[in-house]
Image (cartoon, rainbow, N blue to C red; front, side):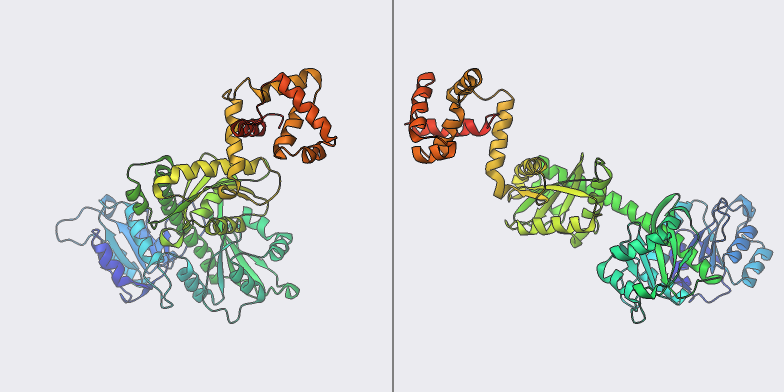
Length: 522
């Protein structure tokens, strides 16, 4: 927990000086509030940043209204010129600060508010480890703090009702809270209930806390919920388990908590966006081929060994962009060693380089985990490339692309096509692509017989295919065609008169099998 003494010491390195400290410097600081003249709502917080305030007297007055413990005031012309050694703040201002129990930190005008805000927010809200040992950059410590101030359990969720953090003790939790925490998101049944009560419609348009009545039949004790918003964008929500609506100071604490969580989520998003950009650039280098493969693998924090490339597309009905962005966000949530793979978004395809050890199980498990956290209405198609060393990743990427294209050509089935299992279909796909580009021979037995069938209504191509698939067994070929074996024998003689079949040569038979496989009518 951050203490006033530590804040003063850290900001001293940025040219801040303490001019008044009526309270103990051992007092704990748990929240930050920034002066916003455009926001009519009263905001409270332990550390008050007097951004844009014209005078020290006004800054102290506003900080007292915010019930702050310390106020940061910029030194400048508004505070009056002073000679060397003179007090920068008027004694009347200092007296008002002492009466209100507000410490005053005078900040060097060369330090920008954005720099100060970054330092203060990092110290106060991201702080050091809590007594419970929770980490500095997650929301769990803040959920504990908020629960302590409100006296009720707290859960913080994102805009899709997924759990971001929750306060520590679950001894008095109702069944809905326990199920939500264990499932890491609100259950479908509870989501429908809350939707029918208009809770989500309220969160979409209002910043005011709303009380959700208890529903014993559904295991719901009652909730106070408030939206977490940045401008008009809904980032998430805070849920407080309570049997009666919160009022007065508790509502104020909850509203302030929503602003603090919004700041935390925005900072996390900015940090994540920067991390994603760097990661994407490095992954694209691997997929396109680079001379510094080892260096890039090392920078991405990936282990050595074999990898697979996964190519994934996602959409909701005809919408091709929102779902893939959501998939990219989920694939890149949790940086460093908490994720097995590294991802990049290229066009409308998400590529992930995943350590595999040659086995495809890890890739399919990763894909299943992504599908599980996406909304039910999202359709996911994927292709999994073959195992590859770091230098072979461009080849695995091509295999993943071709596997994805093969999956997109199918209706229904599993979300993914794996190259190892479908290499034969992909080979034929490549040959068909070559044929469609005019690279297949325009003449030869298959081309000749195709033209003859079109001009005379014969069934020679069908007969040739059946004979080759039966490996020359007339009875089997006749069975497939539904004719007598003598009919097959007769057709083969007629076909040999039209074109030079040479069915006695293995290489000719192989070439005709391939030509039939890529034949447009095949």
